[in-house]
Amino acid sequence: MEQTTRTLGEKKHIALVAHDHCKASMMAWVDSHKALLQHHTLYATGTTGNLIQRATGLPVTAMLSGPMGGDQQVGALISEGKIDVLIFFWDPLNAVPHDPDVKALLRLATVWNIPVATNRTTADFIIHSPLFAQPLDISIPDYQRYLQARLQ
Image (cartoon, rainbow, N blue to C red):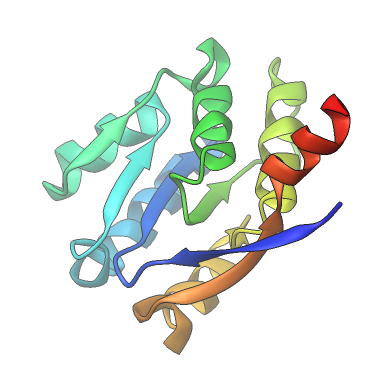
């Protein structure tokens, strides 16, 4: 597929997702990076978002709970170019009923070429990267060209 460029702005739109066994780790990570995160726009699946907002006071746009469609809502935002970074602490040791949604969310993040952290160490690497605090051009699928080719 042809590629085009999208610019991730200096102020990032960050999606925060955590499975039940990873919520404490997500809360600790957000708390330790609160000073950096307050300069960005935060989104999260339902329970995670509400917990973060209550614990830190940071504004968070909360979607539905993951099993109720929140993962898919975040995926839709990614495909619309409205999410720049995905921090997704998922539990690799416990299957969840919405595993297909989890796989779809990670697939969309890869298709749309956004930075993804699936654990705390990678999240630390992303947030402390010099690229995190500046605009960054990324290559994404040229969806308009794709549609035009399909309609011919």
